[in-house]
Length: 71
Image (cartoon, rainbow, N blue to C red; front, side, top):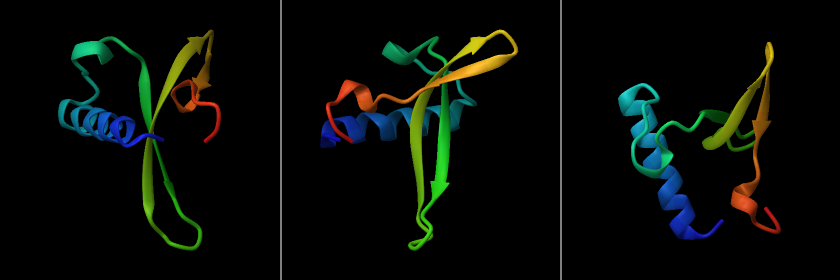
């Protein structure tokens, strides 16, 4: 992921946490969740911004690496 995308995601994560999920700017009104995983070996926490859409009583989770060719 390009460093500018990492910086953007960090800002989104910080704002999401500070405002209880009320984002501003180009992210206003978007349905996102923060997925935090813990590395099996490192024990390091990693948080990722992921979009979702309600589908009836379920949710469709969208993780596309911002449309990049490879992760």
